[in-house]
Image 1 (spheres, helix red, strand yellow):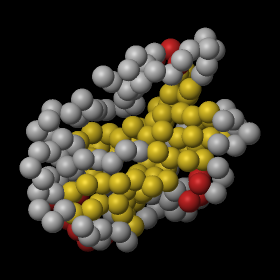
Image 2 (cartoon, rainbow, N blue to C red):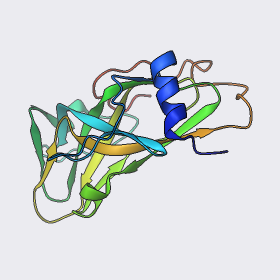
Image 3 (cartoon, helix red, strand yellow):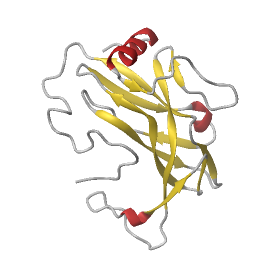
Image 4 (cartoon, one colour):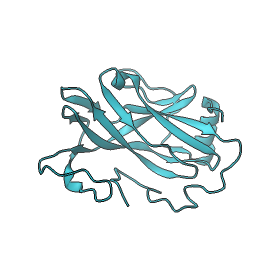
Length: 184
């Protein structure tokens, strides 16, 4: 299962709309870098954030998740409280080919500050804006910059197309835009 290079990512983005909008080269002057890299694509976070709060001492239940556990924030930066997390979504909309699985890793700039990014794999034929979980593992507030790089996606091409794709299963997060909370 090879990791796909920059020229393949560019071709898929330009000819098949795999990433929209697509930034063809790394942007890095004064920002957390984003855009096409050697073997991946560094995506940007939007200016829409859902910051976790426990004002009501709620229990986090993935089967019955309460939207009241979050406060909405919109703007060029988001402050995540100490030992807490926020959700955002990518600026980019992804359309994953049937023979590709995509994994995501956090940016080293944030990781070196104790800010961890988590995204589950993007399955074959999934499409949408990616919901990103950003954890602040530090005892201090952490600043996240909208419109700048937040994570890197690596594209792994399978030996052959899968028998059943995410689209075939009519996955519950298909076509999502904005931040998507847990669904059952």
